[in-house]
Length: 414
Ligand SMILES: NC(=O)CC(=O)O
Image (cartoon, rainbow, N blue to C red; front, side):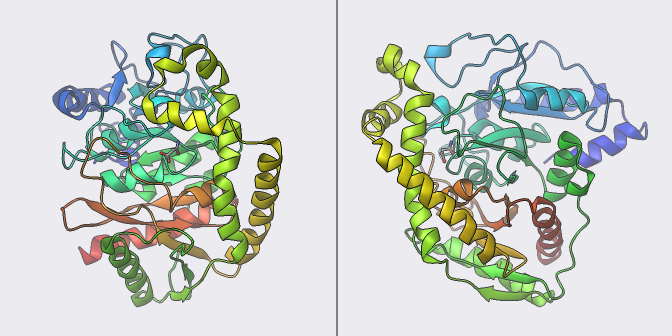
């Protein structure tokens, strides 16, 4: 995969021009995307910017508005739709010198009907969703950076399936202005890149928070909580193997691995994700449902048929339970430094008809806590299997720092 930091460093010290770096990405896209189908649209030419991300070609998920490329939402309803303005995150990318290499394929409105994208490791396997194109393009080494969104598990899950690193930062760290909403309490922008080091470098550049380009943490004495999210159906054995493998590596490096069962309030919050999302998605997609219901893809159409039956009382209860869950999560995560858990239920689904399941991601999306995954191992079908780090709300730098230390162990153990 291409490295954000390495490209930025080489451009900054004059080893290569920003244009040459962009040409490299462009040639890789030309060579591979016909089969991978990660991009929905691309500009005529990649024009270099100026700043810490000069020369970095970035994919932008196609529910995020761009003033010079259409925003198709993965739906025929928005075929050719041309926003007037860039979303705030696109403005931040350009201000940092990054170049938009294209709009990456999304599932329709970021729900569960698959995008056309293939898994870079197996064209018959799913890349996951909903940020399918972003995960596949980064994992395939076409671009060093991509933007995704997560309402359930749409940043962490596809990255884990495709073998990319990804961060779903603390809720609202990145602005969702100009992003088609799905569920306003949940929708969170995230980044995909080759490594935790690249994620930290890019996130710091995009948010003017240099502390996010965190130095690698020392694992000596680190309190690493281990949680299996027992309230959700168990994963494939390979995921348990991955969890135990990363815990063992951390333990050998001096971390204290502490098994931590989730408090009951988190299991309640896990169940509240559904009705809360149902109510908010009904509102977010009200116009499309009222005027173009037949043009909605089957899973989304059936989902909205049911979601619209959610009552105000159910929504208000879900909000109360979520709020309680956030308070309990803050205290519970405060008893460790970082939590490690499953990133996805298994290897990528062996079908293009499914984007997989967000059951190990959706609670943390609702809690608003930072989540990060980096590639770890291959499963029985030869596809990537990873793990997920979760930190306290606002502890994004700490999650990045610990991930960088674990990455070093993974590389050394390879
Ligand atoms: N947008 C989302 O997060 C939905 C999903 O998890 O697939």
